[in-house]
Each structure stands twice: as structure tokens, then as C-alpha cells.
Length: 362
Image 1 (cartoon, rainbow, N blue to C red):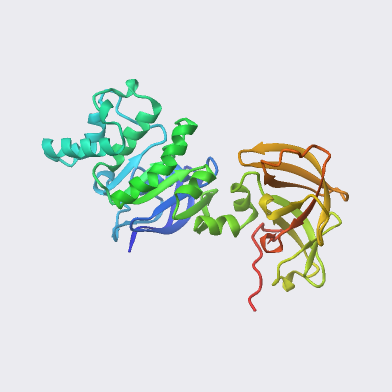
Image 2 (image 1 turned 120 degrees about the horizontal axis):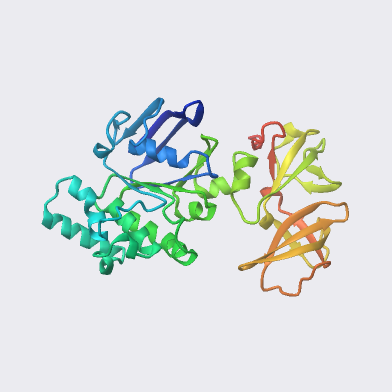
């Protein structure tokens, strides 16, 4: 059963359309990540769901009930903000307890629930502290505790890890899924970090310019992006994009005088110009020539954790990014590699619209 449904939700500020007929469903217990670049409407979307903003058009359904015109306090929604938004004159305990106080819970019940969530988030030792005495990590956990303490059916998290240090952000990416599953709430999680989206999401709604550009599982979005725009948002280093000409047999594409093998099923693109997308990890590199490989010269080398990123140039002038294991430390600028693009990983996009071309079904 869907906990949350949005049906053609549109939100405007004066003449600016921030959300443009946004529709999707989130299932009970699902972690749905709202991902997109800055200014794409992610935070506004959460605030419409929470009831802070009222949409000009469309419907917000929670637990099967139309909540479009219902006040925020009656929506059974918990929310944690990017900037923590803690009450400065309340202790951490009082901040966490505020949703329970609003629900008129008894003092004993409030104390029990606050202690329980604080222990879970490892902040029981700072419950008496005011926000100014807390580290960013403690503030972030306090804000999460406040959002979760009343066990709401829906939890909205607005980029809650953005203002914490890298180490804590990595730790919380590991901890959050376990924590959220324990509460069983449906979670909408906003981020503009694709790695965070991939790590946390059951499904991802890619929001670009106020519209849902793609709605799918993380792996599907990465391997089968709906458009060049979506493809560029995922991956480090970024996807290689080239303009190419498909041959008449639709088994090769010519890019800067380099012939690349096409996957099967693109007969309808024979003789046509397309944009070609190649993920850096889809380029297999060898030290010696093999059948079907092209010679490349190393132009630059960038270490990237367990991999190194190399910018390669073919004799015909084609430049592309590729990766290889970082333990191979002997590579130098000017070295030669022989490279081959995995045909099944090559993507075709329409030059006019940027939409991905789908192979024909046999």
C-alpha cells in the first residue's frame, strides 16, 4: 500500500513554476530519495508534503486520505531540516520532546520515548545541553531524534547530512538505513549528493527543473538513465558524451574517426546521428594490443581512492575519461594504453531531445 501519493502537484511563487505537475507514490516502509541539482525544487516538494506550502494544483494523499488542505500538525509527518532548525532556548531533551508535547503525551511517556531515541542515536549524554553547546553531529542527531520520536508514518529529511563533516556523513550513511527500518516509516530523503542517493534509496526520484526526470531503482538510473541530463548527474568521474554517426548496418558508430561497437537492437538508428554516452568504468584498458582495441595516450592522471582516473587521447584526437585500479602505480603521462568500450554499456541519446534511445524489442 502507498503511504504517500502525489498527483500532478504544481507549486508557484509569483510567476515562477517551482514544481510542475509532480506525480509519484511512495510505498509503506520505503526510503525514497528526492535527488537533483540545487534549485530543482527538492525542499519545496518536502514542504508541500508537510503542509508548510499549499500547492496551486494537484493532490497530496497520506495514508489514503487527501491531505492537500490539512494543517501540518494533523498530517502525522516528521521532518528534519538541512540547517537543523533546533529551538535555541530549548535543551536537546526539550527539542526532541516537542512533537510529543504537541500531541499532549504524558510526562512519563515523553521521558521514556526521548530516552529511548536518544540512546538509539547515541546522544543521551547531551540531552541537557542547549543547541549552542552541541557539535554539528550532535545537532544533526538531535534533529533526527525529534523527527523520529513520535514514530510518524512519514518522515521527511531535507539533506540532513549536508552540514556535518565527511567522517560523520559517511558513518550516518551506514547507520541511517538500519535506523529508519527500525521505525518502519516511509522516508522521503532529499539530497544533491548522488553517492548518498545511491547508498540510501530503495528508489530515487530525479527532480530537474521542477519535473520528475526519472523515477526508478538506483542501479537502473545509473545504468539506464532516461536522458543525458540524468546521466551527467550520476557518476564520478562524469560520463563521456560524444556526437557520433551510426553506420548503415547499425553495428558500429563513428566518433572522431574512431569506430565503436554498438549493442544490438538499434537498426532504426542506421545512418543517423546520435549522442553517445560511455561511463569511464565501461572502458577496458590493456597494456598490450588486443583484438578490437584502440591505441590511446595518457594525457592526465588523477588518483581517486581505490581507482585512478586517466584522460586518454586516441591518434584521431578522441579524448575520454577512463578508470583503472589505483595499485597500478607505474602509469605515467605519455604512456600508451589499448582501450575497448564494452558494447553493452554504450548508451545512445537523441541529439534533439537528449532522451535515451531504447533498443528495439525482437
